Image (cartoon, rainbow over all chains, first blue to last red; front, side, top):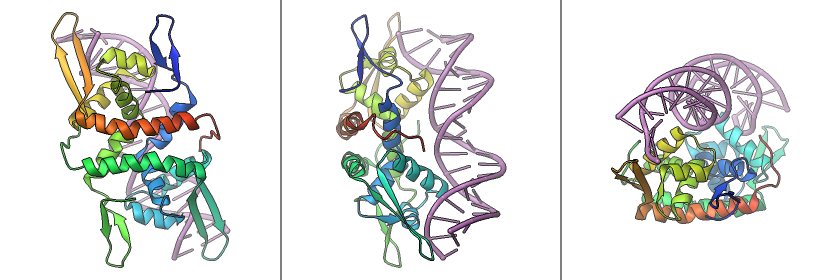
Amino acid sequence: MSGELHREPDGHDVYTAQGPSRALLDLVANKWSALIIGTLEEGPRRFGQIQQHLQGISPKMLTQTLRRLQGNGLVDRVIYPAVPLHVEYSLTSRGRSAAAPLGLLRTWVEENAGEAPRSG
Amino acid sequence: MSGELHREPDGHDVYTAQGPSRALLDLVANKWSALIIGTLEEGPRRFGQIQQHLQGISPKMLTQTLRRLQGNGLVDRVIYPAVPLHVEYSLTSRGRSAAAPLGLLRTWVEENAGEAPRSG
DNA sequence: CGGGATCCCATATGATACTG
DNA sequence: CAGTATCATATGGGATCCCG
């Protein structure tokens, strides 16, 4: 495990708890983020399309997650001021670079789902 | 985005909301899971060692996450009934297979942290 | 009509103290 | 040392209402 390590006086290393990494990791290592980014990987999508595709996300979580992704420069939001209103979300180049590892993670999940299930 | 799709009568596809994937994704697409698995990737570690390394996780979350990982067959827990008590956690082979995509995700995070930060 | 803000409750998470 | 118990708070999430 590399990066963002901090060497202690007594010789072993720890993670700096307040590093910016933690916040970003919290954003991308997140169920909805992973799914949304996966959806947008296929191309630009509208709010309702994402909601349909993810089948079970509430509009609130969708909005909230999209805003966080947008705020961190992973997602672009474009409004087409037509009637009815048309808003399109798409991945930025950074978002696409994040989509790669997330895609592998989702693939791993799909290949490993349905075995040894247990709540905790 | 592949896997676990469900074709609707009207032609477009959605994700089955209640599939086992969602639960597993929720487990691995999680900040603490990603960090813990990353720590154990270096080798077996004791409870306190993980806690030190992650610098900021509460014992409760550590226990809870370790148990969930164990319950899903990603982590092994071995007790050495000595005094003082000694408990060691390690990745199972499945855990190691999950460590790969998670490592890539953490790498991405480290390479992309500290830019365009924003809360929401 | 599609997009999304608000209200309110359930659960997740976290700090801290305490025990086998 | 390795957790568990307890309490306080943040976030998740559904239902519903509002706006362009």
